[in-house]
Length: 250
Figure 1 (cartoon, one colour):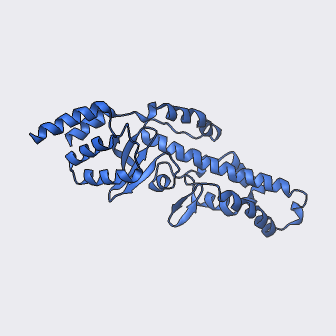
Figure 2 (tube, one colour):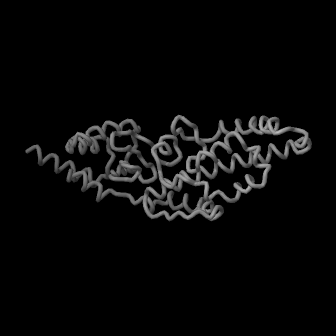
Figure 3 (cartoon, rainbow, N blue to C red):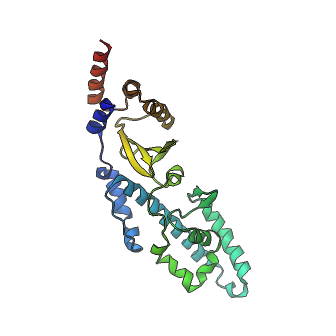
């Protein structure tokens, strides 16, 4: 697949150098500082995990904001309610919030805080009433130790916790397209093992499935022809690859 390697090298867009990526990091790094979370963004996977972590923390704060508002609305009669009554009323508002928040499905379980452990997820989804207690309310400000998922996972991609768009799952891993860098990535064990720049990609995601099928069959010429016909690679590489394929016909 030497021709594809040439395209990879010449058309590559460095994700971490993209303006949109640098802007996202700058606008959201305050979450790391607020919760004293150590995360060094040095490679593509780090950034995609950072997106997941930010969305997890946004969901967390949405739950907390809902609890505070509900508590304030019931403050005049809160003390007259027993635990089950408080929980029921709080959960009515929590359920409304959950309808608006993204989630992932892991082991047939909905998780709104996919970077955090199952116990914390259970509390935020069904037991926010506990936040009237000091030992639970502290989670609003100190949650670093509750994070137990420290890397990107396929379900985070599949359920849109990142800018990645899941294309296909194969026996080795999964494929995802990133519009920020116009790049198709192949993940194995949640680590990028291959990347394919598609600097002029304007098609539908399902079109990429056809290209992946050709690539897995190691049909390099068909892969290149699809790049050219769809107009996915740079004009310069299109001209170069067209000439090479024409010479091969002779």
